Length: 281
Ligand code: GLU
Image (tube, rainbow, N blue to C red; front, top):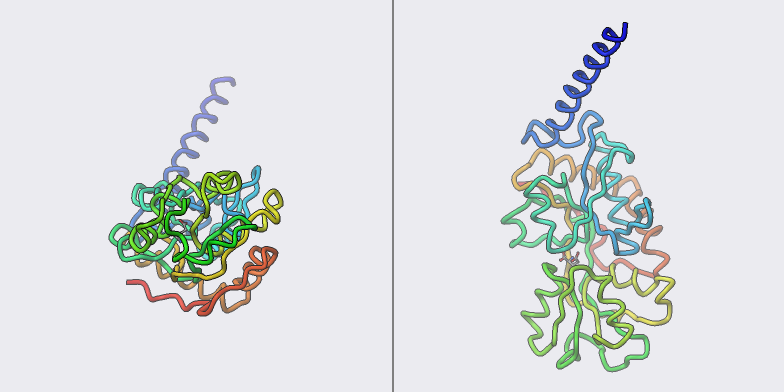
């Protein structure tokens, strides 16, 4: 009887393994295997330290990007409990996608030609602009032209750092791995400003622990088209994600998610929002 039971357990285990193999084989299976189809899980890259956009607090994930990711996942047939959230720091996004560590990335990820060499994008689903966060009592930094000789903090692998290096070479740029690492330095005077997208900066300025300490300069000096990054050339998946973005905008969920996540920080989306996503190629 014991042997028979063991046999049954072994059979069940084999079946489970077979099912698991089928389930995990599908998402990465090229054009036919569309990740998340048929209730399979999805690994989604987000930011973990950007309140209002992508934030991990304990086991809770919140932010506009998180809401976009959940909506898209649902349209692909994956419920919230079947999403594995993966931290996707700016410099690691392409690699995470290329190596299959994530199915897609929704992480304040600007669509650029350089990145398109390595990954594909669905979107844009939002348009942000690069701005500056300074100490609340600083009246000297009024825009990027007033940064000469100042110490500026940003993140490796971001369009924000790239733009400063190219267009404002007189600035002393310090690059960290994530934007939240810049905040203590800004507070204590180690740096004079933090530069990245206004969405991210608004979230930091509104954070309880920094309330009244920082201000966003409010003169955006770039156009950041946020896209959902996915495996290069997976047009089938890209088209499904694009359709999901369009639906999220047209059924009012996009506005609702924006109001709930960036409204409390007083953030007003700039011209061109909501954008019309491009066709996948
Ligand atoms: N949107 C910009 C980028 O993709 C800056 C924000 C970020 O690093 O996530 O590089």
